[in-house]
Length: 351
Ligand SMILES: Cc1cc2nc3c(=O)[nH]c(=O)nc-3n(C[C@H](O)[C@H](O)[C@H](O)COP(=O)(O)O)c2cc1C
Image (cartoon, rainbow, N blue to C red; front, side):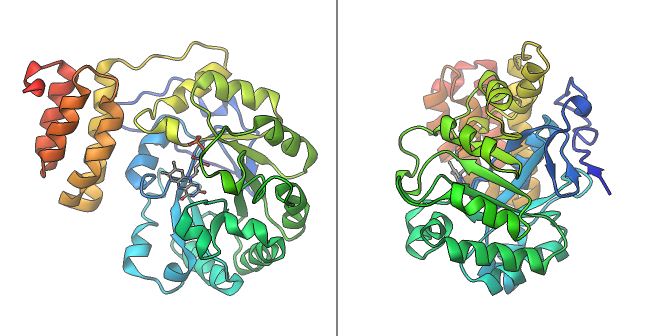
């Protein structure tokens, strides 16, 4: 049976108005899911919570991925961890949950919990380079033990009926066996797609993502490959999609405060000029991001919004003053007043 996600049709009743139809591209398939767009919001721990994902979907992202979730914590159904699986199945379909861990049985249990909670796809994190993650043998450290990585994927695939994907990097370090050796083994145990961030584990976020290596990989394996790393414009995204053999493009940092980038990507892919967002549209998106967040987590949103609202305001005159002012505010309503002032160019923001 073939499904298609309906995020586009479910986009906001007010605000972002997507201008293209989802039927434009239907080539990225993950198990039974045919995605409506090949442009995907990257998982970003602490950032890609449900409010951010909802905004990206409204602007045409074909898939969003949860923040990475600990397999140990999820297998024990901790309430805070279950909170990371917050979604709305009428909007986010398929719902992709990313898990990290290093014990195959724990991953299997956690995948079952995620599936019970409504996950449609399980993504395994074999790519995170954060020190505390790597020191405990998780994330990209698994590229130092390909047998364990395959065992984790195999048990997870066996444990659930939904498709399992892997997100990883080129290798632990240059000269080490890595994704090229891993991919056929992952395919053999039933993994349905691989996202490749074109850096080595030891690089962290330094240097540049190597799209030549991503292209070589995508053209040499049978699994659908999603490319990730340093995509900052819709022109880059469309060019890389057309020229490298990847089936999807994942965008992370560049989408912070620019959710319309997913609309831009679809427009450029269709041969159109991207629609530049007006000031009003930018403000409306920021406003929505804030109100979604407040609806999810209540007054605690004010703390996260010190970062999130800056993403939207950073290019405006008075951004530095806005930052100082917003960091003093503890109420979302007050922060939104400052946001309105910043977008209207009100000089009060400078005081
Ligand atoms: C703040 C932050 C958090 C991230 N968290 C995750 C994560 O939880 N899981 C994951 O697979 N990748 C994570 N990544 C990596 C991104 O998914 C992506 O692969 C990487 O940022 C490169 O893409 P970009 O240049 O488009 O940002 C994170 C990146 C950033 C900047």
